[in-house]
Amino acid sequence: MIDYKQFIKVENNKKVEQKILKFKFQIKRKQTIKMKNSYQLKKIALNSFCNIDKQSIYNIIQRLGQLKEEYQYFEYFENDFNSVTFTSFNSKIKENVILKFFCSEINSLKQSEDQQLRFIRETNQIEYQYSQKQLIVDQFLIYEFTFLKYAMYERIVLPEEINNSNYNFVRNLLINKHYFNIEMQGIKKIGNLLSQCSNLINLDLILFWCKIGIEEIKVIARSLSNCVKLNCLNIDLQANHLGSEGISQLGKNLSECQNLQVLNLLLCQNQITSQGIRSFIYQISKCNKLKSLGINLQNNSIGQQGAEELGKGIQKLENLITLSLNLSKCFINDIGISILAQNLSRCSNLKMIQLDFSFNNITQSGFGLLMNEIRNCQKLIKLEFNLENNQIGQNGTVYLIKSFINFRNLEYIHMNLENNFLSNSQKFYIKSKQLKGLRIVIAKFLV
Image 1 (tube, rainbow, N blue to C red):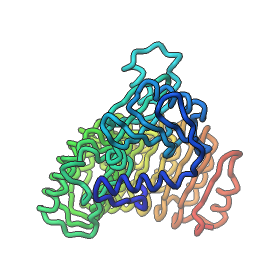
Image 2: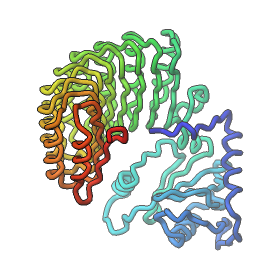
Image 3: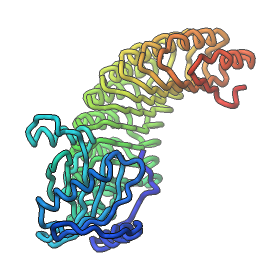
Image 4: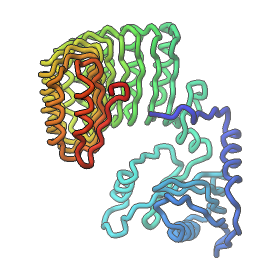
């Protein structure tokens, strides 16, 4: 999830440049090194977690200075694990620029420049769409940005900051209108904004408790289908009036976002039925690049059939690594949970599962089937489940302990079994059966 504390309001190009320069000047100054050409390089102090050594940086700066005479100087700005960023002045465009260096070991690979570029992009999981130029020098991929483009690309942007001159540069967008009674005109404004920002990579759309109905969600969903470059999407539509038709429309349009890797949907309390779930999850299953999926359907009447449909859709996502599914108060029974679990067991790449089946109609039989199927996820490392207020009963502990033995790679289990007719002695019994290398956590209020 995006850290909302990082918001920075930018009003114009000058303010962006001033902010970056101010940050740059806070870096500890060291003696300037004069090179053979007219450009200068100031000594750099890389963060300890950088994967690129200083000597490699010095070498590539020298090479770049020889090849590209337009750069007047190079001054260290910042770095992360796989990249180092410098500021410079480009005499050709007569503007201060940002140069971002990415390193990848490609010298040993006999590839064309296009293949090399593609290789480095995949290695670093980047797609810098808005750079002035991009070039490969030795084993480095280098991007050049103007100050404004770099600032817009790197940070989270708010709707009021977007205008006709910068919407193509927006990569990370937050729209937060919770607790607003948004009229259709306001919804259309949001839709138009999303349609313009066609280069969006990360979007947080917070519209819970906004009295959004079928017509409103259609406008938003259609605009999302234009954001084909979306990689991470978080939508909060809790406590609205989507219904089955609205959720079906949302799924249909999201299926057009074929680059999605992370999708989190908060859809609690929206009058969604099993029919809506069937259409919705069928469409979502077309997003075959998804690695992380979170769906919160708490307080919707999806029932047994809805749980079954969810399982059928999720098991088609072959690249899924992380799954979070909240079906609390959704009228799920033993049959629903068992069929859902059967389908989840076919997700061979799952490493983390979070399941919330609290306040449903699950007995020890359903719980046993759940654990029996989940143990087939052989790559599973972390498992969290909440089965509060069901009817698991005393024999449920037997299924639980037996399942622990069959998890080969599991390192961590967190469980909430409150109000399931378990005695304190049984709760302590579960904790006493911790296996070597496996951490078992029971909600604190249980024992």
